[in-house]
Image 1 (cartoon, rainbow, N blue to C red):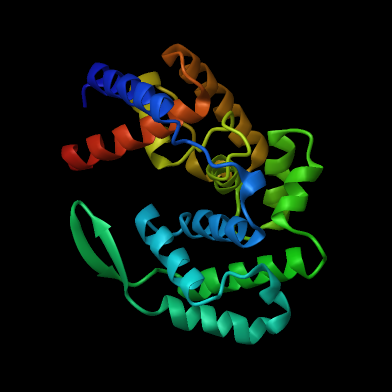
Image 2: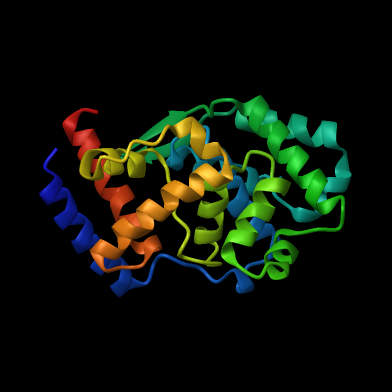
Length: 237
């Protein structure tokens, strides 16, 4: 891969992202059900490609299974409904073609989502309350990691990005890590990034990279993710 060409593409995409302002929603205007949907997308994306994660969350939402009030319907029955729904093929568009894909690890994902809903809503909490209670993005991330089953630092950062809570936390997924190895010689072990302290050390490195591009972390992160995803596919990685 040509690092200079990759960097140039990232810069161009950063300009487009900032011009279109498509990085963020506004979490203050989202309903609790919408916040739960976003959490579901982020949770599922740790186990499958992003398009499938979105399609799976959308299917659950369409079936009425992502309602924040639903925690009191019975954990076992709810988990069974989730697993049955996720066993159905999902229409997913990739590379201009629609494929029907069955989600991976549906039983595990059903368990994680059921446990999360029971823990949060069963204790009178909510995603909105958690975010309101925090004084910083890092504090919010730490609280989410503690309370959302299936959330590590990356998933929590992605959730906060997608709902528009903040844009300064890095989403260190495999495409970002590949760029850091290729262009900067930074080679963190992915397994170490499940620990918040290790994640934040690599995040500081990425924040320096973002400053070199002259754009906010969230903007560079998204542009780099898109660029590396396409470049790796074209290179046959």
